[in-house]
Length: 217
Image (cartoon, rainbow, N blue to C red; front, side):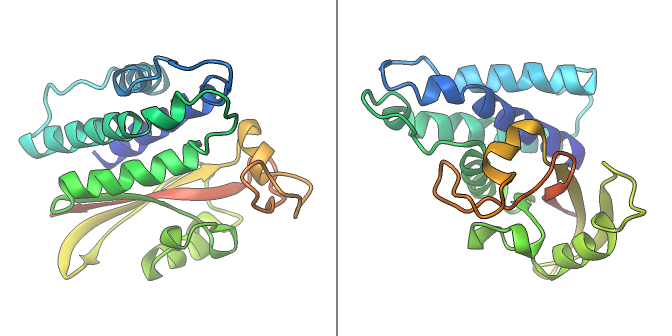
């Protein structure tokens, strides 16, 4: 289930990424970039990447609730930003993949916080938003596992630990810079990107962050 949630979030974020030219087009008002459209495209990407559709068959009742909560969170966030997305005469809207993911994860927590949490974090030196700073467990896993030279690229890390006083399953799912990430996170280091934040100087394939998932037992 943790892998499903990570892959669905990544798919939704990818939809926002590929639609940036549309979202930021100042000459178009109604763009028809709705929550339903995003969820449908995210499910299609999920199916293509994983080789199977995001089916609810065979899932436990709890797992069905978690998938439904994440889909609902993605839909709500897009719908809440329709006025910004459809604003004419304005180019960059600020509705970028990182912002989308953070807002979706916050909405997901409101819907399913007693059962699961999802957030995006990163090595401390790469964190832009204070809300994304790694907690002690995430920081240790990032530094001793995911950033280790001998850690298999793409391999996630899981552990059963207490979280907020409750037994839980935790997973850290590594994410690496792709070519599309480098316009904001690449070279030259220190140059301001479109959001006004200094670029990190990353290269394609570098570890850029991780999706952190908690599923309470």
